Structures are given as structure tokens and as C-alpha cells.
Amino acid sequence: MTRTRTNPRPSAGCISVSGKPPAPRGDASIGIPLEHPLAMQVGRASGIANRAIHICVIVARATQPVRAPLGLHALQLMPPARRAAFSLVELMIALGVLAIGIAMVAGLFPAAIKQTEISYNDAVGTIIAQNGLAMARATLNDFNIDIPGNIGDPLQVVVDDDNTHGTASGRTKLPAALRAYRDNPDLTAPTDKGFLVLGRKISSNEAQLVIVAYAKKNPSDNVTAVSINISSISADAATVSLNMPNARRLSPLILADTGRYAIIEKIEQPDILYLDHQKLDGLAGDAWVVVEAGQSGVSPAMAVVSATVALPQ
Image (cartoon, rainbow, N blue to C red; front, side, top):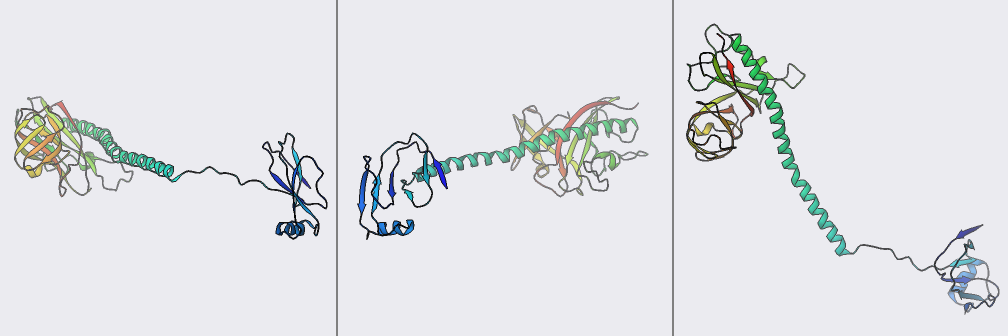
């Protein structure tokens, strides 16, 4: 059995095992004594013992496929192949670049998660607040809820999570099923989302409603609005003069006299609130913040919608 091998490079040395020296072709040949270990090993392997062994070195460029018999009748000695490899310095540089890339990618995850949460609150919270506004309009027209106080009075809580506000003699409360936003198909499962309503009478036939959508940490907790007093607002910082412990980060700070609001982004003790914009600059007075009973630190508020609605006549 034979095999065909094409070798475009100059051939190396070969060992020829035969009973006689190779014919003179300009080849360089070396004779090895019979007692030489290489001669004895090749002789035993090839079956030719006690005969002269010749090593010939042939320097030529193969231009045609070389047909070589298999086995030890022709043992080709090839130089060991040189394999490319990375040095330790190159490997360390590559690992350093990889580590920097992983660190940069990992640093994006917290920001992406925070942005996703903000986008979710903006989208879902606005839907809940708009639904709450439509529900408040409908219940006002049906005389189911009432806006307490007189014309020109500050904002008051009309409907909240425990529904203790906004009831009048002979009128029913706004049912919990109408105040809740259910994103679970299981109707028996508790819901953690809903809205509360603040309102004030602008005139005899108009009222201002402020709807705050919320998402509770604990579905069994109650969410309501509590009052604090702002002594002054300068730029984006508000100074609290009363009920500072009621303040919650991410809660809307809703001014009771006007219904204007800003979001509390940071609380700095003992009495400073930092807001997300400067549109309340120069204002002061009583204000509302949204809190969840039993929870501190962050408000459950998601979004705020304010609108002027017609009062039933």
C-alpha cells in the first residue's frame, strides 16, 4: 500500500535500508557500522540484519507528488514543526483589556435597571393616574364623593387607600375595587397599585383634582397623603418647618394652595428637601407628601396628574 504526499518545501534527510549502497546520483551518503545502535534498530525493524546501512542526505525540491511506501522501508525524518504561541506579556495585556471591558459592561447594569424602573413608573403610573382621574370625574358626577371645604380652600385629601377622607352624609365611599389597579389575572390576589385623589374647589362649578398613582411595597399597607409645612423654597431646595419626618424621597411635594408640585429627589437632614426642578421657587406654605404606612425612606408614588374638572350642579 502506498500514499501520495506533496511537499513544496525542500526535502530533508532520509535513511535508506538496503543490502547495497545507493547508486551514485550526487547524493551525500554516510556509512554506519553494523554494530551502531541505529543500524541494529533499523535492521531489526526492516528485517535486513548484518548488512551495511547507508544514510543518504538528499537536497532537492519536489516539483511532482512524491510516492513513498508505507512502513520502515523509507523513514522520513522531518524537523519538528514550529508552533506560534503567545508570550506571557501578551497574555497579561489581553487579560487586562478583557477585565476592563467586563468592568465597563458591568457598570452599565445598575444604571440600566434604574432607567427601566423609571420608565416603568412613568408608563404604568401615568395610566393608573389617568384611570383615577376618569374615575374621580365619574364619581363626582354621581355624587359619590365630595370635595371638602369652601371655594378657595387649599387642597384636601378626597380619596386615599383606606378611604377615610371625602365622605359626606348620605354619600358612599369610592369602592376599593375602583381605586385599585390590578395587573394580576388572579382577582383574589391582593393588588399593590392604586391611586389617591386630592382636590380643592376653584369656583362654584369647577374643582382642581390631583391624582397620585402609587405602588405599595406591602399590599396590606395603607397609602395616604400627609401634610408638611414649607417655610421657603429657593431654587430647587425647600426648607421644611413642620413635620419633616413625614417627608419621603421620590414623593411629589404638592403645594396645597396651588396644586403645583415637584418630586423630592433628596432629603438632607435636618430640614432640607431637594426637588427635581425650580418651578416652585419663591413659594411656601402647607404641602402634601405621599406615604405608605409602616414604610420609611421612599414614597410609593409613581406618577401625578393634575386637572380641572366641572362640579355637579
